[in-house]
Image (cartoon, rainbow, N blue to C red; front, side, top):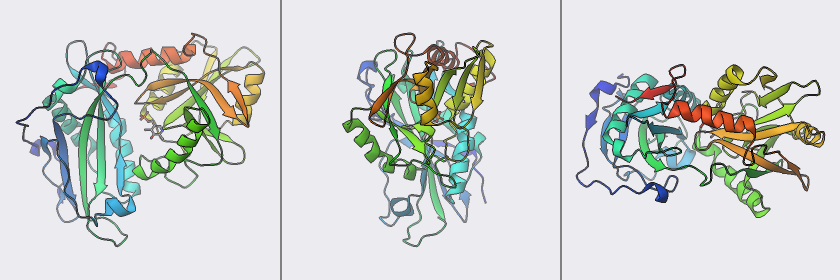
Length: 368
Ligand SMILES: *Cc1c(COP(=O)(O)O)cnc(C)c1O
């Protein structure tokens, strides 16, 4: 059985290039580049020839298992144009590890992540004119894996398609930061122990739309997902979440929920933990621990809640200004006006690495 082999790549270029959309008109995930990357897999032959070809519709049997039993998983990554015009990705190896874990969990084939990264590089070189320039602008990459066997029998797919599409995007919010208000949600649960909330499976996302609409109807931007009778804080919307507390003895703590199987293993989360451990002043400790909405409420009342933010590829960091809980709002300080200080530092640290202004531990990869 053939393993994924980037050296077999075939490229068919478009003969009708799309007109590029100006930066100020980019809408997240609405327009796509000229090409897409596809690799078919079958149980008999393994991974087939990787192909980059003009962006196109799929033709699919209505019985394809992806359409019935949610054999689908995805990744969210970005490519950035640096000041020399080179195209960079941020820690793509982490996305590949996670993608393979998601694939294994739903009995889809795994693949050599290093080879897929080489293919992503080639794709980026073909569509490099679509990578927008400027701070906050990037090309959003959506690697996807679907089961394509035509059968209504529930079982292990014997056919799959690994593909990549890409959408030029701007900053998620127009202003520098736009702090969000959250509804602490306990009546709907995003993920649970023994479940699949730590995998990027499409099936995890559709059920979150209704609670998100309901939170919006009550005037909040996003859900703060709680778990269990204790009210453990897990994630916010589709981001990981960090809280910063002041302790009575003058020390400070930046914390986020531990990877206990209910938390998506965010690349941004991991990067923030590593950077903050190295760079925050020495009164800070950086932890991964369980904490509850009750602790947040109590410490806010004592004036010990310093700041809070969501973290994910799309926004990098998203400051939180308020949390609705039991009919009241817990106010979260925004010490710089639009965010907390750690939030602002982290945003700049990560930006500098993503756009290649700074080298850190080889986190930024140049496509070549
Ligand atoms: C993708 C995602 C994140 C963030 O992961 P990054 O790798 O940092 O983009 C966090 N939570 C959920 C539920 C996600 O789907």
